[in-house]
Length: 328
Image 1 (cartoon, rainbow, N blue to C red):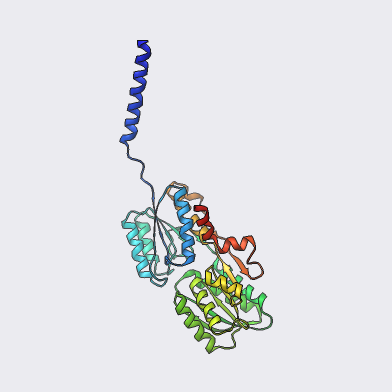
Image 2 (cartoon, helix red, strand yellow):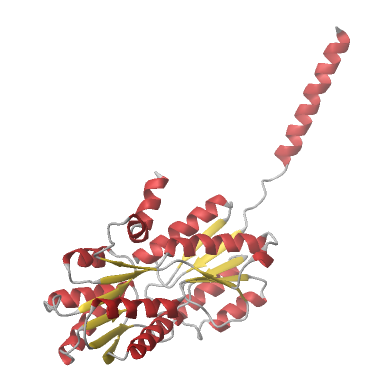
């Protein structure tokens, strides 16, 4: 009996010592990742944040999210890059406002030992481990193809573009213009370079259409400019004679697609950009960085009135809403 009691006592003491040792150690700190985007208030970036948050939860990462107030403010974004380094970020996941003007800030971060993942819009730094996003040249060609297939006869094209320093915008416009030129029946008659701001894009699109009433195809290359262009077409009552191709998913452009003043949307996959960007950060932190591809092309598709209610189109248009439903 005594022997059994001694054995039981030793077992209890061993358990207490084991628990004490475990209690004495602080839990391992979570690895730190900073997501810095071009802005924080568009539906596009809300979907990016949803994907990034899902990956951070899955891989137990500490994720911070920041971005300037406008998509033209590369100086503030560069300061956010420097601040992320100062705050101890081990990986920066960046959607760059300006391909050239953000390169030095990223180089400086990398020289401090920070790993770099680029999403959505690239940056001209050799330290980028992987780029995750749309093949923007191909997406521009896709926009041109939607117009060429939707309009018979000659196309007189108006282009609504934005910040000339942003890599994705440049590539989309280049892809679209090359495809239009190759068709032999399209000509760009006017270009409005505007701010990444829907009200300003609307004003500038109205001016473009008034200056060039012959325009029968209008192309806008991101979410805010597409919203502005859609509102301009509706304001001028030109839905019947202008074929509008926009980018991304927004309640205004989706309504426009159903009501007739938007004809096609080139829909990206921002949720995947956020998720894969943070997942790539995790791989870089856990010595799996060698498995990363230099470029990861996230899916892009054309949504129009013929396919808007298909399952694939609904998933593309409402990816963020579906994430919120799954999270409840």
